[in-house]
Image (cartoon, rainbow, N blue to C red; front, top):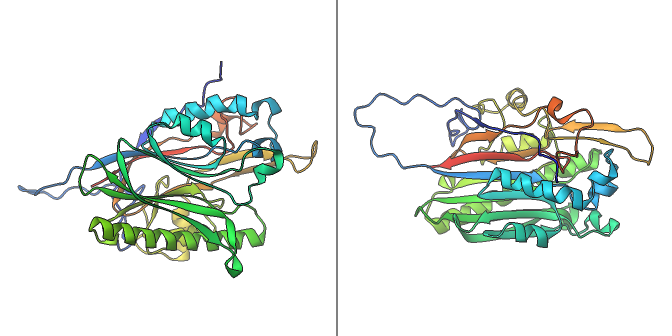
Length: 352
């Protein structure tokens, strides 16, 4: 019998959407009190969705990435029941995943979802004999009609295609005429060297540009202004809240807020304001011990690199709490109780 997953609960977040012009609000901001009025006027009912974001740790990379975890816990056979349980626990309408291989098994598990998948062009998982890993976006076919979809590969200097991409989908709620949503799923370049850091920042700029262009196209098809088209971007962005990547996301013309950030989105951005906002992110979303040589010294890697970003028309109502370091234990991740080195993020959002 598979070990039990780490215990996690949902936490209510009292927030209000960020102003489209970059005003206060967004994830973590206190909801404004309603003004007194004898006639508040017609109010559109909000439509609520659950969104899951998770780097599941690819088979092949789990066994060859230098993780200081008992080898028996890193096999696909040991991890697959826990992966299934983690996905089921979120009961999400939209699932954004990274490092996905065993696509056939996962697609079978996700019956009732429309599937978009993009493998890496040069997946390191292939070196271990595993299937190529990539990004996957699953959307409930009962909740949504998939209106449009696009895969955008990031480019390196000289226009060469990078190993990373973003999946973009325009969804229409089947139960509510006029309710539309654009969703993006991505995985940015890994690595702590200067070249990787610079490439990540550039990929964040490409992500913002691709999402903006796709949202404009989706809005036109839906008969909406671009700013009224709700947008949600999720992924393993492989960089911390004090990075150039994070600044790029925060200061873009999409006016994004980070769903797991516990602070109000600042009304205007400066270096100081961005740093202050970044302090509201979780302590970590990935935690592992890794060694570069068999039997060599282990190095701790504990930081925040996974995010769900929302536009001003998306209200974050609840977040699925992350387990504490004490609950995980000093051996970190993966473990007998968790199949990946990244924690999943899950939010319940509404769009009016």
